[in-house]
Amino acid sequence: MGTRVVALLSDLSDCDVLAIDRIELDAPPTVETKRLDLMSADLGSVFAGVDAVVHLATTVTPGEIDAASEALEMAILHRVLDAAMETDVTQMVSLSTAMVYGAWVGNPVPITEDAATRPNPDFGWAVLRGEIEKATLEWANDRDVVAAVLRPTAVVAQDHLGQLARVLHTARIGIAAEGDPPVQYLHVDDLAAAIVTAVEREFDGVVNVAPDGWIPPDALHDLEGPQARVRVPAVAARWIAAIRWRAGLSPIPPGIVPYTSHSWVVANDRMRGLGWEPRWTNEEAWVVSHHPGPLDRLPARKQQELALAAAGVTAALTLGGLGFLVRRIRRKTSDAVLDS
Image (cartoon, rainbow, N blue to C red; front, top):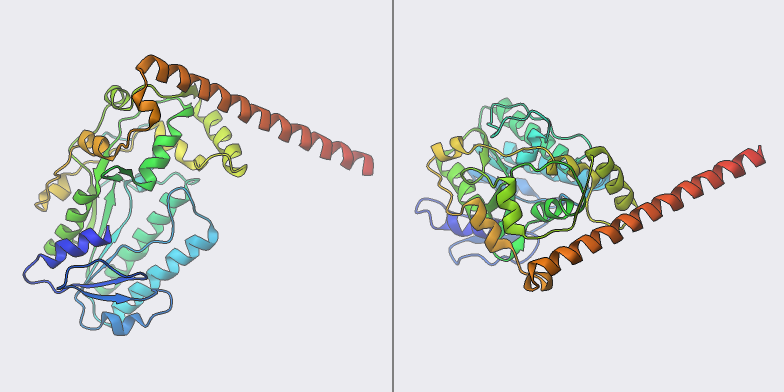
């Protein structure tokens, strides 16, 4: 993402770009680069003379988050905001996620920026992005400067599902919650272009970033082909996901389940109003990001047979693990009674 944004900004005739990262950057020759750590560097001196800051750095992913990483993420943000305030930066651009709207029964289709933010409380990554939004917008309001917060849907790239897209895809197979909401996939090039548009237009406020429309459930099933799915109520799916997550058997955080059973697709009218146009449709983004695996080369009937067999094994292992935990709890309870 950072490499793409830097390249696009460097193409602007009236824009001098300073790119910052902890590693060596592959940047155009016209771009000044600095290798530093945002948690320890003197950002005030780095930001001196800078008009706009595009903050894309993150330490967390949708599938891996804990209290320490949340604290680090917020600490980095506040260091960036404090340095920007000291050096009279007049524009801030940061990334959030469309997941801050939450996945709830009754969500409008699509969701506009006027809707309240209600991230599902047990999906920590979305809650954290909401906190980052709030801190950024409050910083801008207190100083009467411009701050743009972009809310993209699931991002993908060539032959690569982004972390969020991967977690969502994994949660929709195996033991999955009932419900088939529409989905959206945003190509990373379109997101980079949206970020640059926000900089150029000096946009102030929040804005959704998504292709036009969405992929209906039937169309998504056609794209994905046969998948291993054992449908259970959402409560049961979250319960099973929590057990597998805590046991280290699955990369799926239980809080993601509602986002696979209720709609949270967003409108892009405001972003389009800034002059941005997506180059990739939802379907095109899905196709280019999908890297065929060995099963994709098998006949459809064979894929379905293997998929259902895998789902059955997963269910058996999950229930077996649950039975083991129940027996262990009962044993501990019995021992406690005897000790008393």
